[in-house]
Image (cartoon, rainbow, N blue to C red; front, top):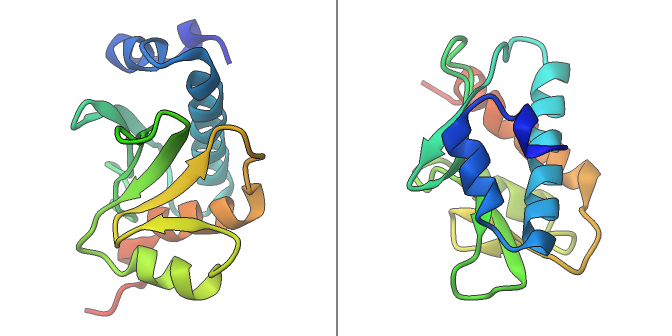
Length: 139
């Protein structure tokens, strides 16, 4: 996806600042977030913005989900991550469901390697769970 197709100039600049290999992976992950949101009933429009200097995806209109962020792993140039709110049970749930398919950083992230294929099915499930988190969580 060309960066000019990203509606927010700040978000486009942030993607442009990443090394080319990570930029391609992060843009593919962005596309997976947006496609999953579009295919998930009740999620509605996604707000794309920056949180903590990284691209973030919010369900501002429907309020159905928890924020998802994308970004490089600062301590490892070959890794990037899908970050979740650490106060949710999302990553614990993912760890139970995908103990071998995905790698994790504590209770806040799924960590991916730039040199590996994107595990689309598992990630789409995790993204959908985050985007519908507030609809499913116990009161």
